[in-house]
Length: 449
Image 1 (cartoon, rainbow, N blue to C red):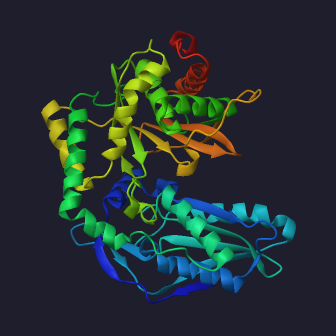
Image 2 (image 1 turned 120 degrees about the vertical axis):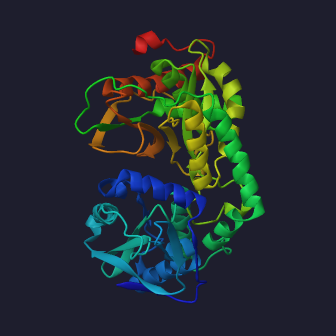
Image 3 (image 1 turned 90 degrees about the vertical axis):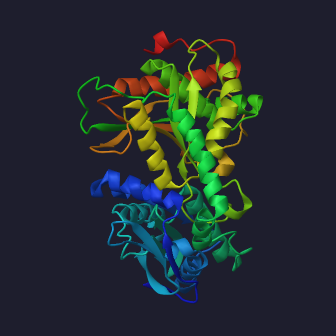
């Protein structure tokens, strides 16, 4: 089945800054791992709010693709090897349909979502969006979709899911998008964009002159099989505690967790300064709040390590540093590459922390709303399937699983072994929970070791 759209603005442009960053990351990851950059969502309609005729659902998909230029842009490579994109004004987008019995709908939706996300996009000849419908007795019960990371980040995927749900339930859109992809590229190429990029790169260059060249300089042991291990820790205790600490210090829960990770990582690795690169959504301006595109880029957060300081004291220092890292996460990716090369040459060593922090929760879930209530129960570390190649030595992720806050870690086990992964994750939980009750007592790192 095809979702046909027509009448949209057309044009070609270079990749936006965030798109270029993702393009580079996908090339580094290699074809076997490119599918890890796919972003999927499942929209389930509660009884009484659906189901919908197939024609209505397909029409809604077409309307979404027409509404957002990023969903109808294909990426190509010119003769010099540089990527660029073409936004199409009309086309036909394939839509998968899976028919099943009523009691199978939830499971079939999960299976179809996984199937759509399993393979990498071919951005030069494939639309950057894959949609699927789960149909029971001729009516749509679920909608699933997967977006290419070149077209959208997690924020944009949540926006597409929300708009598509509202379109089916209410029959229209509340307002036009705040900005479009071609407008974003034009803004980045303007004087305002260049000024923003230069200010950001000045922040990065200052940090790159004082941080360790890498957070993981040495091979400390044999690799696990596969080399990059992945673990996740669901913790109700951490969810409750981080809300208390964030509210007490008037910061976001993400800032609390990034500070805790940096404090422990710097101490565990023996660095006086910890450098970590948060993945920033860059949706702080009105023009970008309803923009479907990839705006996420790396920020640079640095923290002077005092392993004996309580988390409360460390947060006094880290809050302003975190704000600067968020504010300076929009820059020309090619100019950033040149800055790294310049500073690395001057220091006579490649400078890159290879250490990132990614809070993938929807923005509205990052505020402090919980309170400690009852016994949260024990938390267990769960090991997920690892990968043989990844483009970062250390990637700490904040998400939700089954309604509970979860922290995850992917690490190069040659440089950060599995036992140290467990030490760090449990250490983050203990440090934040301890701080929620008693800010004056620091972490005992020797116990964690």
